[in-house]
Image 1 (spheres, rainbow over the protein chains, first blue to last red):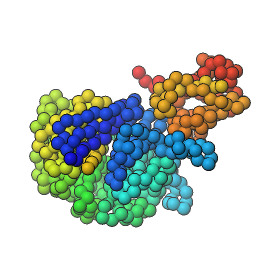
Image 2 (tube, rainbow over the protein chains, first blue to last red; image 1 turned 45 degrees about the vertical axis):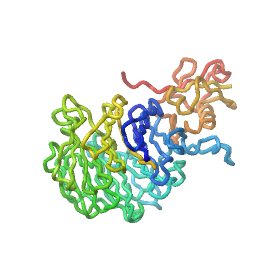
Image 3 (cartoon, each protein chain N blue to C red; image 1 turned 90 degrees about the horizontal axis):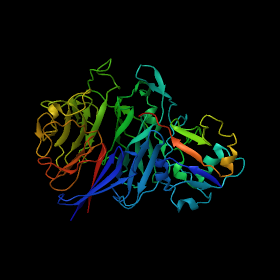
Image 4 (cartoon, chains in turn yellow, green; image 1 turned 60 degrees about the horizontal axis):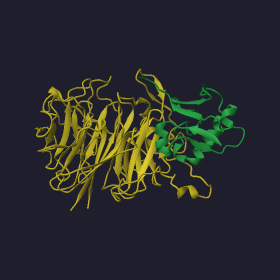
Length: 394
Length: 98
């Protein structure tokens, strides 16, 4: 029977929730890296026991952790006892070294972006928001960081190098931080075209590369953001999350600061599909594992009130790729609920029927084993949840 | 032997309990102590000082013999009590709020 492993990043550590394919009885393992903020934990699609974690601290900076046994044990890549026996005697200890590339060879040196007050501000590395293991190689991982840039490792996390063409694109000086910082939070790899990749940045927008990350262009036509000087600007949109079904990589779904959007031409143009949502503000968006037109969002009241409308925690599902939304409430609190669900805190499994999972800032991780019709908390009292990823294991 | 006290988060990261003891050649300075510490525990690189500039991270502080040495030159000799191992070199995460 298949197994499910849910990788949860929280404000105070990582947790691993596991169950068999019935998804009824769960084991909770953790905290791993207790006391540290764990922004994201994600496993390799080709080797599910290879898991990467982004561990951060305002005091002590960024740490990258790696497990080769499904989360039982962890190491900072390049500093294990075996690797300390290299010819130099000691490893470099560079698994947490994220240095922006300003070389002339790999893109225009770019050292400033737009600050909140409109002035230019230097790029300063703060943390890794999202780790995206490559589709075909467990040693290759992409990292989306704050201040916004894309890094890649090809040696299992021992060293990281910026794909500088993104930050060096012409629009870089116009990027600006959102309320949560200027973060690159979404990385989507096209399974049908290994040279195509999508990323999203708050608050710059969505970008696409068609040459494996060398060059990038903004794909924000059709987005409309009332809160910026030019609502239809090329960049400056606060994109919160993008989702893709692997069978249809040209169709993307977006939860923007306000508005839920879709594109069917790989981002060349976007259309709004918010329609009957009680609020089209929110953070996560995800796609059903077996139905490419079934999508999920969690409406939040507003940009200044980050909790569900009317204190009712409702996931909304559209089976038509947007516009026609139904509230999913069974098992979710329907009064006095004022939690948020952050952008990386929703995920799906690939069992039949599809399982949907999300974590809240109140520390609950909810699961539905029937595509959202019924929900139960796996665990109720974790630290605030930053991210949720699901692995479906044989 | 030089004694070093790490803050709890870095003890967890380095997987050590209590004080760390290090062999450090003379002269014993902040830089030589941190170099020895990072050589023994490479996972600590980048957590106390910047990978590239080698400057102290803003919310990390260094204390010795009850004195805050965070703003002293990293190449200034540390007090004899530290060099002789009778007192520990203390690394803390600054408390920046209540």
